[in-house]
Length: 541
Ligand code: HEM
Image: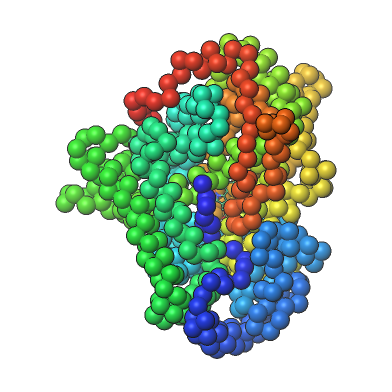
């Protein structure tokens, strides 16, 4: 799982460039920065830019930004206010520290805060110009969003409930047989959901070619470092220089990336088209959209938008979903009391006679609260994906110039003690209340729902959020019903403690960890006949 960084972030440009490259870059930089700082004067309308730490001429705040876990540094600057203004070279970066401000700007003024900064290196030179995550606000963006929303909205997701339930059981059944490989089985079952939905392909085993192809494509993006931070991204004109100036290895890696980007976009799309011609395609987002847009001459209108949106789902949805389930497993390992509480609720409903289904969701408030707490406790995308503003604006007496990057500080929001007292503790009860009239435990309506933060904002809000919460929920419920999850012991009987510090980068993922899975009650008999392979059972779209 990712492995990669789907969007631009705040950082120093990659330092792995050759000296020649650095020389050329600096020469261009000087000229461009002079012109960009001059244009500032005309953009501020006499209103101040949001307050923030004083930077250096030209560099701005680059030298003050930590190269890892940037959200920690940004939280330290939150005393400047709910909006903090920075500069990274000539790029204005405005950090949004509260949910209210993010909603005011990114949601309520969505018409001017819904673009993405151009990532020249990846899109123009790396072959990743199809990805929805990176598209600027405009026609192609609207079409791709329309495509994905149609298949991922809250009601469409219900059609995949059965398939997701099967994937969760598949994961748990495999884990019961080979617990050491649980991370691999989780990756496989998550990929199974996305591949069936997007291409009608059923993932059958760990060697699945479709998953390998997509994972390789994502891996090769690593050459970008953190997208948006290479000198070519900061100053696209540098892309006109011959590529060898960045070093031979870089030149080769870029070529590899370009070649493999095909594996997550056009290649699976072309395979589905071929299956359609042969009459073997299973219904999927790709086959339905291709069918609807098929021209008389056999070509498909909007083909780029179709393969772009389908490819974006694996790219954006795979690692985020896997990491969320991993966070949940970690939370259960280190909080056996919370695990037991969730299991007590589940057992009271299932009586050990069956495995959970989506029909049980509303009857399990503690489990719903545990999912919300999992999303809040370790936000997988701690600085969300930056939005890019397309018009000058004013807010709270400050100037928000067009061309700014708006960075929602998700970490700050989910650790706000006013919304979440004692924010560092993992406590699902913070979302629950007991109704005095009927004695039932219910989700509180007066606590800010972390789903309104961690999935982003406005017109760019994560279109996969319903799929993500549903597939995570059924996986959590199935795991809790079948296993005791605990910290494993080594051969001397000492606990193998997991590292609870998640990785740096745009996606903050758990580091590899081990977990002990002990089957509960009659879990093994419930799983005994459960097939881990079998013929494809298509989703009826
Ligand atoms: C827990 C899991 C997930 C988390 C935390 C998450 C989080 C996010 C965030 C923060 C954004 C940026 C929103 C913004 O710019 O305001 C995003 C965008 C996106 N997500 Fe997710 N996501 C998850 C799962 C998924 C899944 C399962 C899919 C699809 C299968 C998906 C597809 C996308 C796409 C296509 C975008 C780009 C939207 C755009 O740029 O317009 N995500 N996600």
